[in-house]
Image (cartoon, rainbow, N blue to C red):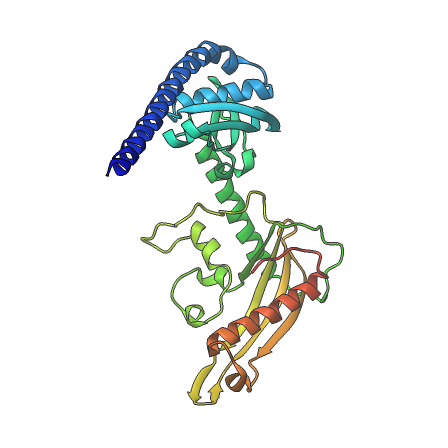
Amino acid sequence: MRLLSRLVVGVLGFALLVSGALGWRAMQVQRERDRRVAELRAQLPKLRAAESLSATDACHLAEAYYLEQKHALVTSCRDATVEPTNPGVMKFVGLRYAYHWDDAILGGAHVPTLCLAKGPEGWSVAGESYQLADCHFAAPTGAGAPEAQVAQAQRARMEAMYAAVKEALAKPDSSKDVCDGLTPTRAVEVLDADLLEVGTGAGARDQRSIRFGDLLYSTCFPKPGQQPLMPCGVGHREPIAYVVAFDDIQEVAPVETKPGAFEGGLYTASVKLVDVRQHEVLCQRGVTYTLPSEVLTTRSKGLREAYSEGVRQELHKTVSALTQGQLTVAF
């Protein structure tokens, strides 16, 4: 019994010791935060008015923003770098900050990539780079937020891309079945050509089991009464250079008619590579996929799943042959 009592007393004493240490550390963090805020307030007018910002100046500007406007508990600078992306716009990395007491006390931190912009009132933090096209936007000239400017420019680029593809597909077919001299890039999108005619509305297209491009298209052109889940053109930080368009699509999805037998399982299309800048189809070739009849006896997947996987594999092979593997195409 005495041993148990001593053990309980020891545990309680240790808990009080740890609690006291954490409390002392929390007060220390708060005092350091107050001191740092006062220092940065004194520096802020000079930082805002500077012609350009060094990495250290940029970090101090970011510290002031996160301490005063974002209510961070601690901030610090480590390995800070700045990279000009446009006149009056910089991409900055190097600020470390913590919002929560456990991170502030134990040393955890977030390290964002930020965009800094010089507007009518001087330099300020515009936001994080993933929200602002990797900091590729024009410096603000008025009260408009950079987020709105970036969103407007992105929408304009996407609308122009869709218009260019539609114009290209309306021209006579290309006689080339291989594209030469392509510029390697990841700025490639994939879509069904008929998406540009009917959008995401109801119709024969919605009855197909395999479709491409709907998610991206619906962010820019949602159905009436619907709000897009993401900003227009999300994921494309630079203009799309090429579009792989599947045109003249015919599909008969497979339907199991009896155990061991099915009907359908046919997909045909014309695969066309569109140069968005030139508004031209550079090359094209046909593709046909037929679901093997033995799939029901050998399958480890469902009938529709096996069909979808087969179509995608055939399309990938066709795109690779069409572009000679020069483009990175994800679908």
